[in-house]
Length: 219
Image (cartoon, rainbow, N blue to C red):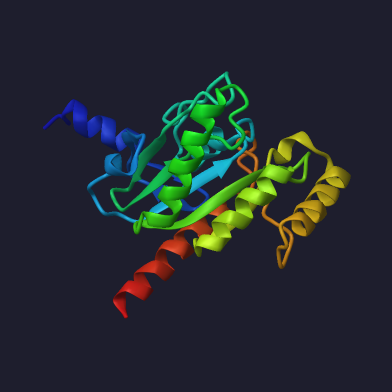
């Protein structure tokens, strides 16, 4: 009996990324305020960083999709939270870029308040991945943002992006600087969406955060 188009599409979509099988990855909705968050209470892991740090590309690479998360040619263009359901088990959340250099001050302030409210009040948020460009080591706004998120009690994983843009010497220097700037116990993971470097370890970290949450709720 021939497969239906829907089944064919689903079967073709199954990919393995970093040792993790992605059976489904789908955009669910955007939100511009807390009332717009998904009603489906699945655990969430959010991604944040400066507007040009490669956040959307990394999320696409993790989910094994090319254009699921829209990569804007204009940094700061995304003004909402975008929710992507993975394996029907949890959400990866794309947050607006930090800095918002291309938008008006009033809109930038409004988005900053929304992100802070989301981090503080969304009970489904289980952790946040913060991307830092390996070439820059972290700007003052990155350090301030990570410190403010830590203050809320939300777990933050700081990682370095754009591994493919540096040589070994620059990599070592960048990792050391990020470790110092963000007061990390060890050098951060460095990833590349283009070369698919570090995706296996990042998936392990994400799944570990989700598992720890399940264990806490089960106690």
